[in-house]
Each structure stands twice: as structure tokens, then as C-alpha cells.
Image 1 (cartoon, rainbow, N blue to C red):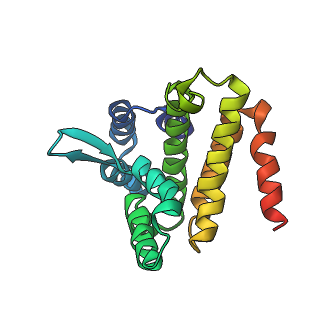
Image 2 (cartoon, rainbow, N blue to C red):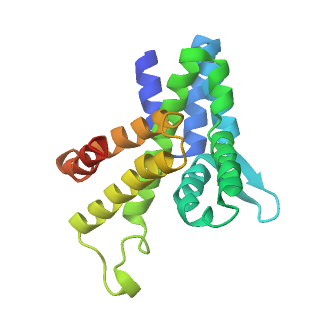
Length: 203
């Protein structure tokens, strides 16, 4: 199996167990190496068991949700202290320190993991009845409305909130991954996000 083939397959797969199988097969065929070592560590760190509920937690998805809710949870008198704690939680969940240890290979692996996470999140959004329901649950959004909502969320989480938190430069790798995923998943509707980004650039 060519490296490009297994890497592409690995990051297109959204189920943890199947991804692990692909990675282990590549390691068995080609040996470990720094590129596979950092991918293995990122995969292991991404998921944790919630012992109380016996559920598996996707820490990358949790990082997305933390970032998404930061805008509403860090306002008020003690907002800056809360904001700093949230920054640290996001960077820890997304394993920035781990990736940094591996230099360029680590940055590439982190970008790809964030890309995989964003694809998983947007796939869930498309299939989730609650996400696609209209106000008060009265009916379901049509496809264009749903894609517009998803574009707004990607823009908010990947552009607006990092800027508000003073993390735009630090989270550039996530911003790039989230943008690339939206364009790849919805090539005919990329203008929904492009328009917002162009507005961002003129601020």
C-alpha cells in the first residue's frame, strides 16, 4: 500500500476503530517512523474513556465545542480568567504541545487530525435532526438553509472566536483545516463561507 494511499484512507475514515486498523497495518508494513509515531499518539490522545458513564469522549470534538461556547461563557467580571482557562483546555484537547515536539511532521499530522475532526463534526450536523430543525422544532431546514447554518458555524468557530480570544495566529492551523473541509465537502456551496471570509479580510 503506497504511503499516500494509506494516509488518505486513514484521514477519510471517521470511525476510530477502523482508523486504528489502517494505521496499525501501515506500521506493520513500513515500520514505525516519526510520521506514524505522532499519528499514533494523536489518535491515542484524541479519545478517552468516561469511567462514570463508560462512554468514549472525542477530545477533538470537545475542543470544537469548548471553542464554540467560549463566546457565551467568558463574559462578565471574571471573563478573562475564564477565557485563559478555556484557551488552555482547547490547546490540550487538540494536543498542540505533542504536535510541536515532532516539528513539521507534527504540524502536518495535527492539521490532518483537525481536518478529520471537522469532517466528522459537519457530517454529524448534516445527519442530526435537532441541528437541522427550524426554530421551535417546527419543520426541517432545506439543504440550502442547512448549509448556510453550517457555513456560519464554521466561520464563527474558526474565524470570529479565535480572533476575539486573541488566538487567531495560534489556531491558524485549525482555521485552515476547517475551511478546507467545508470547501471539499460542499464545493458548489463554498461561496457561503468565502463571502464571510472576504468580509473578515476587510475588517
